Length: 299
Ligand SMILES: [Fe+2]
Image 1: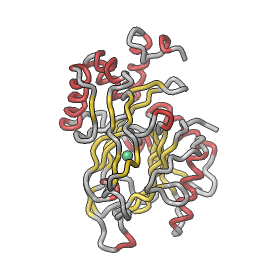
Image 2 (image 1 turned 180 degrees about the vertical axis):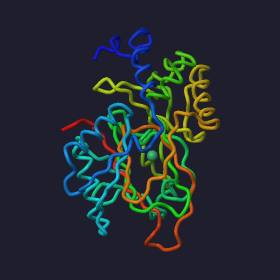
Image 3 (image 1 turned 30 degrees about the vertical axis):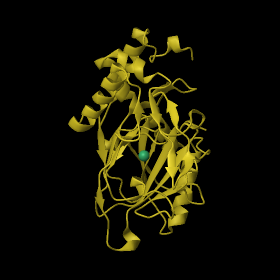
Image 4 (image 1 turned 90 degrees about the vertical axis):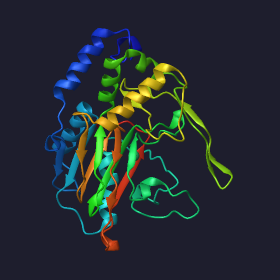
């Protein structure tokens, strides 16, 4: 798509207004309307897959629930991988904590010889999109997050469709969008572990347009470890988002995934509240996450 025909072109006011209106009119924070039950995980139906696809098309996200989960964790895990494949999601980002089957088990754990990463603790996780530190060639376009066991309490997900974050920023000041589209808007310093560089420094824009004309967002609310471009528009845009996280917004969804429920999304903005784990080690909070370089499509 020519950028000038896109709603994301700052000079195309009409296309933006049309797209904006459609996004906001259809917005819902009713999770039931965003949840599709999959009756038979062995073989999700055509209608179930279509319904999930339609939701991701409109909202950049969809929830699902497995109706007949197995008692066998690894079987369920295979079905999560299979479900993602119905949407063309096959190219995993194998991060350093991923399991052999390429999904990552998110549970409280210590990874030998690695940093104590917050995702694998019971701490609050601040707002971000996944893989914000990846290279530009390895952008994370899609995620599946599946719950095998919720926490005893807490561990709630807060989610904001990044299209709506874009609308809020652009309505406040189009200069914020201009700043966030710059290829050096944010830099993530190199990841150094025990004196060895395990990831080089990475600069990139916050917003970019993907090959199918949709919006991609790269963002982390962490105050440390992010170097923002030092100009007033960028810094004000960063502050605008920080205020949004602190003050809340009716556009932010809140949901705690229950056992055998999951989220399929186009790497929307998300964060997680702190949680308390069950004392029984077999009932510890356990989520599976797949990060993909592919974009969600109906195959
Ligand atoms: Fe994440």
